[in-house]
Amino acid sequence: MSFVGHTRDLAAARRELETRRLLVVNGAPDPDRSAFLDAVAREVADAAGLPVYRFRVADAGERSGEAADTVVEACRGVLVVHPCVVVVDGVPAGTADGSLLAELISAFAESESFLLVGSTDAREDAAALPLDRCADGWALLTRAAVHCDRGDPRAAGPLLRRAVEAHQVAGDRRGEAWAVFLYGRMCRLRGRAEDARRLLHAARETFRAVGEARGVAWAGGELARLATGSGTPDPDALAEARRLHERAGGRRGAAWAHLWWTVARADEPGFPWQKEFANVQSRFHEVSDRLGTAWTLHHHALTLARTDGTDGVNGTGGTGGTDERRREADRLFEGALALFEEADCPHGRAWTMLEYALRSPAHRFLNGEWAAEIRHVFHGIGDEAGEAWVDLAEAGPSPGGEPPYELACRYPAALLDTLGWTEAGEPLIPRAARDTQPEPRAGFPRPGDRDRPDDSRAHVRLTLLDDVPVPDVPARIALQVVPGPGHPWSTAPLPPLTARATSLGHAEIDPAHGVPADGAEFRFTPHRPGSHRLRFTVEDPATGTVLQQVEAEIDVVPSDPGPHRPTAPAPRPSARRA
Image 1 (cartoon, rainbow, N blue to C red):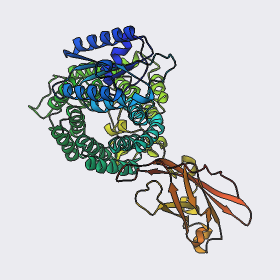
Image 2 (image 1 turned 90 degrees about the vertical axis):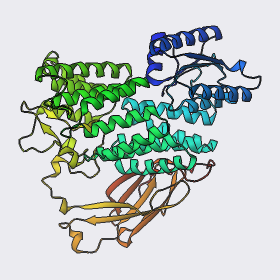
Image 3 (image 1 turned 30 degrees about the horizontal axis):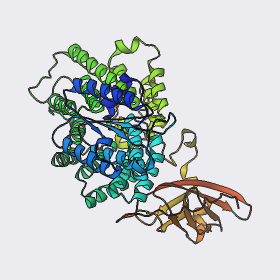
Image 4 (image 1 turned 60 degrees about the vertical axis):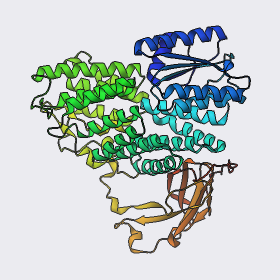
């Protein structure tokens, strides 16, 4: 359930509802809007074999408060019985009633039902998002989840920062915890493991404090996936996340945890992957999760294409020989590709196209531009790491066996050590490579730097001295200039350099400058949660020469406990050269 937006076309609306489980329609006269909602609901209900329930806000009470309470409680009553298709029409989109949409989104979070909402706002240029701040926070979370599901986390960060602020203003700790959780998930997607771990731990603690059992389960699953991204999967932690989802009644979350547990163990000798992938696919079918089904088919096909047929059950797989397994893998790849396209997930589509091309030579040779096409899809979501894997597939193994720079600077060495090659020279890309889109690590030596030994340089080292920065509380940052063994400063005292600090966001940093030779320490005071950028400029005051300039990004988690009050943002400081 992760889509809010204008919809005009019936087929497109049905696809969005089946994929995202939520549809909000506005900008039309009441009779046309109601007929449109009913048509979409009827088609989806017939295809899924579910009953349809209809509510009108105008029928629930004269006052908007009574309407919101009555409709939401009625929906909660329907949801606890069985999955269904719920149509809520006549929802005012104005400021006074925007909270109703937020309540509906909250009520349907993690449910297995489909929700269609009709807004009475008939302005053609009206935004699909409510103006109420609490509703705005939930809608922003929804939009951010869409970007993460698509494998395009670039736009999720600004949305999540605004979502955290909106929930803080409303004093909604539950919504704030979900925003922090999604922020941690986004950091995991970007390969920022430490930031993700800190945020996910913070979200899990808040979920526990507010009694959000499903949130605890989701946070535990994401923390377990961090280990997978480092090349050392933790199946036991994933199994525990699955048990937490099942105890909380989260069938969809349990299906995802079951999938990642199966993926983590799929390459183990004797593991019954055929049976487990089939069970996972049934789980996703029961909750109508197309994206989950697509990833299940992808990994099932990948296992078939890489195995000799054994599946840990009776010594042979369900497919007979190599040709039969290849045909079955092709069928699964094609099914996954179709579902990724329907779900509008270019990340999954690009990886499926790549693996399909590598495992099916006939498919690849039908299109001489196969690599350019896949690279184009990765490029569309800003996934430079995905493009690097396509480059590797085209180039083949290097003579020295070293991974190319574009991969080595992004992925942990432990993960790249699991990279294999077939006898035909095709890469066996680690499964975990498709779980993240890591950016190049700061300070990683570029190819042109290899002729210049690292020990002849001086580096700037920044250390956060306090554990978890929170809004309006100073956090200490130490700056050191560290010369290498071959640098002249390694045997002589550091000269009186000046380190100037600048905040590039809503935060203060004090003092404005320090002297590294004396132990430069700065106090960083953020005024908002989210990601903050700081710039440090090291200069030689005797000559006015800028020796080095570095930028650091620090994630600030919401303060806890209790509801939060908005704080006036600090003026944006100007970055000036000394």
